[in-house]
Amino acid sequence: MELSTIREAGFYDVDIDPSLDLFAEIEKLKKEKKAIILAHYYQEPDIQDVADFIGDSLGLAQKAESTDAEIIVFAGVHFMAETAKILNPNKKVLLPDLRAGCSLSDSCPPALFKSFVDKHPDHLVISYINCSAEIKALSDIICTSSNARLIVESLPPEQNIIFAPDKNLGGYINKQTGRNMVLWNGACMVHEIFSLEKITKLKARHPEAKLIAHPECEEAVLQIADFIGSTTQLLKFVEKSEFGMFIVATEAGILHKMQELAPGKTLIAAPPDNSCACNDCPHMKLNTLEKLYLCMKYEQPEIVMEESLRLRAKKPIEKMLELSRKLGLVG
Ligand code: 13P
Ligand code: SF4
Image (cartoon, rainbow, N blue to C red):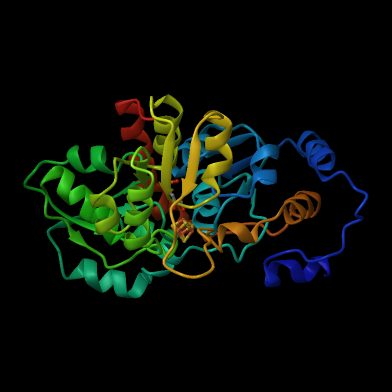
C-alpha cells in the first residue's frame, strides 16, 4: 500500500520480510525516534510484551499526560489515542490501525447526545472516557472505570447528573452512590456478551472460584460478582487475593498479564452467550505486531484533530486528571 493512501485507508497492509525480528526492530525504532509505546491490557500478548507501559484507560491517560517522548504509539483503540493527542498537541500520536474503534463510543453519536444534553439544562455531564472527542467536548468532566465512583461522589448530592455513554457503568455507580443519574443508553458489545446462565453453571461446577467482573458488564452479571473493578483493579485483586481460582468477566486480553502476575492461580474466561467462545474485543484486536512495526517505521496512521475541538475536549479530561491526582488515584 502506498504511503499516501495510508491516511485514507487507516492502516498498513504491506508484506513484511518474514525473517525480520519484529521485537528487535521495534526496540530499535523506539530509540531512534524517541517513541514510547502505550498499550491497553486488551492488546494481544506480543504487543503487551513490547510496550513501555501497559495500563487501563486511566493509567494510559496519566502516562500520556506525563511522557516526554516525541512520538506516542498508542496500542489501543481510537478514543484512547485521541485522548493522548488532546493532551499532547505537539507530539505525533500514532495508532497502528485507525479503524480500531469502540462499540461503546459509537453508541453515543454527538448530534443525538447534544439534544439529550439540551433537554436536561440543569444537569452536569459526566462522560466515561470511552467516547469521541466530540462527546468529551460536550461534557463537564470525564471519568474512567477506575475513578467513576469517586468523581461522582466529589459532586454535591443535590447536583443533577447525566452519565454517558455506558448505561451499565452508570447504573452500577447509581447503586453504589444512591444517586439517580440520568443514563445514556450505550453499552460495550464485549462486556454485554457474557451468558448469565453459563456463568452460573460454571460457578456451580467450581464453587471455590471467585467471579470478578468489569463494571461495563450487565447488571445481572454484576449482581453475582464477588469483585467488580476496572482492568487494573481486577489485576490487583487477583494478584493479592488469598483465593486460587477466578472466573474473569472482561475482555480476554487481560488474562496474559493476570497469569504473569498470579502464576499459580487458575483463571477461567467467563463464557460468552454465543457459540464462538470468544471474549476478544474485535476493535482492540485490529492492532497487530506487524501493524505496530509499520506504523512506527512510516509514522502513519497519525491522529489529527481540529484545534478548537481539541481545546473543548481537553477541559473535562484535565478536570479528571486533576481530581485523580488530588485523590491519589493511579490507573
Ligand atoms: P478500563 O481500561 O477503564 O478498565 O476500561 C476497559 C475498556 O473497555 C477499555 O476499552
Ligand atoms: Fe470499546 Fe468494549 Fe472494545 Fe473497550 S472492550 S474498546 S469498551 S468495544
